[in-house]
Every structure is written in structure tokens, then in C-alpha cells.
Image (spheres, rainbow, N blue to C red):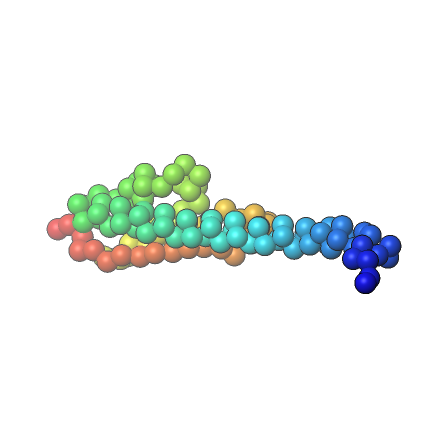
Amino acid sequence: MADPAAPGDAGQASVEVLAGIPALLLAGLIALQLLAVGYSATLAGGAVEAGAMAVAAGEPAGPAVRSALPGWARQRVETEVAGGRVTVTVRPPALLGPLAGGLAIGDSAWVRPAS
């Protein structure tokens, strides 16, 4: 019967674990980025609802949208009101610099403006 711990295989497991660490870190970064994008989509939905309610009440949408967001997102939001359409775009935080400019989550709502 062959010895399971043959002398040539002594460091094989350590090498495999060491080689797998970058892949595990990359998978973790991707998961965190997806969570940030998902959370930003939820925030955009709530903010566009606040903006639409403000427009329906005859008030400007911008302050209502910003007040519906947490502090970090207030600097990352754009609001557009065209007729009865309120559009909110939130730029989620990016873990990697090159992604920062390309990520944007938007939501829109239609509302009848106050007369």
C-alpha cells in the first residue's frame, strides 16, 4: 500500500492554498461590488419616490431626493425633472477606480405635477 504522504507531495497543499488566495479575494471583491450596486438601486427607488411626492405637492424634487438618501449618497446623486417624470441616478461606490465612472443606477417615476 502506498503512503498517502509521499515525500514528493509534502508541500503540495500549501502551494494550492497559496495559489487560491487571489481567486478568493477577487470573488470577495466582486461580491462586495454587487452588494453596493444592489443597495444603490434600493436607495434610488426610495429617492425617486420622495422626489415624485415632492413634485406632486408642488415642491422641488432635488431637496426631497437628497433628504431621502444617506450622507455618502447625497454627493453621488443626480435628479432630473421633465414634465411629470422624475429621474434619479445614483453612482454606487466602486472598489476599483476604473469602475467608478462606469457605474450608475437609475430609477424614474411619473407624477402629475401640482396645479
